[in-house]
Image (cartoon, rainbow, N blue to C red; front, side):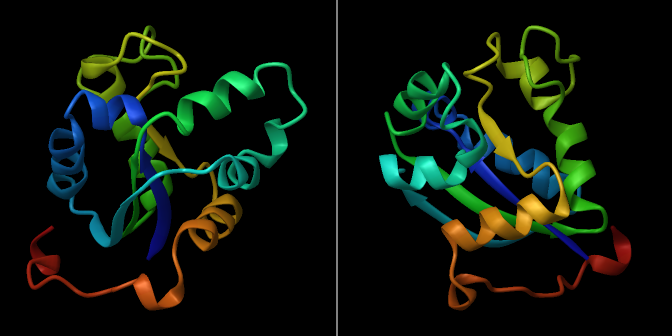
Amino acid sequence: MERSLILLKPDCVQRRLMGAVLTRFENKGLNVIAMKMLQVTPELAKQHYAEHVEKPFYPELEGFITSSPVVAMILEGTEAISVVRNILGATSGLSANPGTIRGDFSCSKQMNLVHASDGAESAAREIALYFSDAEICAYQPTIAAWV
């Protein structure tokens, strides 16, 4: 089983698309093993986007991610990272294929609704930023054999 951190970004929250996005992940058979709504602080944004802090676009990125609450969650499943990224579609909603979350709901590169971990190392680092071990509730769904 693999895990991915998911952030339903401010545009997803403000547009009331949280349920629609979550439904796509659940319909694919991924387990939600942790979830909470929070306000990202500038300090947390700097930790999360550490590789971008010195880049010229960072102030705008921080302003966006701290502008409204986000919903953070951990999804678990077989090849969860690549499965999630395929469900999301291309980073830019302008070029994302129809049928993907971004292709169906986004028309922007920055306001692309959802952040997802891009690899196992980043998933572990990001999960630790948003969740303690006590907040993670891994389980085996009774329908697992059917998914």
